[in-house]
Image (cartoon, rainbow, N blue to C red; front, side, top):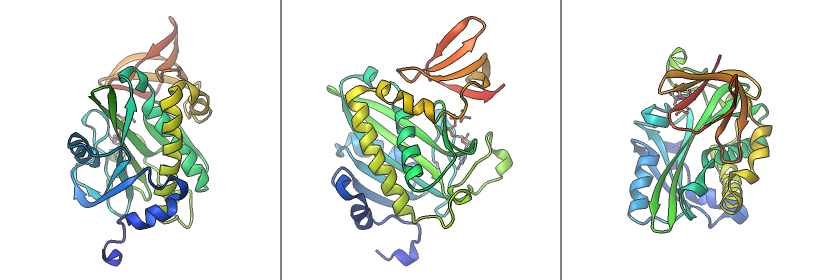
Length: 268
Ligand code: ATP
C-alpha cells in the first residue's frame, strides 16, 4: 500500500510492531471510507469475525454517537475505529462497559503524555473540560456469549465543522501535545490499555475499575441537569458512577441511581 498517498491510513504491520506483547490480541481491517466503523464491524461480527478485529476507517461518512447522534471527523482530524470483543455470560455482566473503555483511553493518553484528560458520564472523553472524544458501545447476544462493538472517536485536530454547532466545545490532542505523535503510536497505546482493561472487566466487572473512573471523573460534585430524550428529567449534584456504572445523583429526594438510556448530563 502506498502510504504517501494515504497519509492518515493505519498500517497493520506497523501496528503489530508497536503492540509488543499485546500483538495477537488484535487483527486489523483498514478501509478508506465507510458509513460507520461500528455498523460495518457489526456486520462482520454477524458473519463470524473473531474477537479483537479492529476496523479503522480514514473517513466515516455517517459516524455515529449515541442514539443516532453523529460523530464528525475527517481523515486528518480524527482517529475513529471500532473493535469487536466477546464476553462470556449475559448482558448484565456488561454493565458499565463504556465507562471501563473510557478508563483505557485515559490511561493510554496519559502514557502518550497528555495531561488534563477526564471522563464525563457515560461516554465522553474530555480534555480540560472540552470534548476530546466519544465512546459508543453496542451489544448483541450470541449463544452464551455477548458481543460488543466498541467504537472510539478521538480528535487529533479540531473537527471540520462549525464549532458553534456542537453542544460541548470540541477539543483536540494537538492542543495538548506538540508535536503530535504518529497516529499509530496513539492507537497502539489505546489498544494495549484496552486489552488490559477489558480483561479486568471480564473478570470483575466495572466494580473493580470504579475507583479509577471516579478519580478521572471531570464532573464530580457539580450541579447538573439530567436530560431524558432532551427533556430535563432531574437536577442534582453529580456523584459519579456506582459499581454497575449507573450515574449517582444527589437530589432533594436522596441519592438516586440513573441508568444510561437516552440520558445526557448538562451543567445546571
Ligand atoms: P452528550 O455528550 O451531550 O451527553 P452524547 O453523549 O449523546 O451527548 P455522543 O454520542 O457522545 O453525544 O456524541 C455525539 C455528539 O458529539 C454530537 O451530537 C455532537 O454534538 C458532538 N460531536 C460530534 N462530533 C464531534 C467531534 N469530532 N468532537 C467533539 N464533539 C463532537
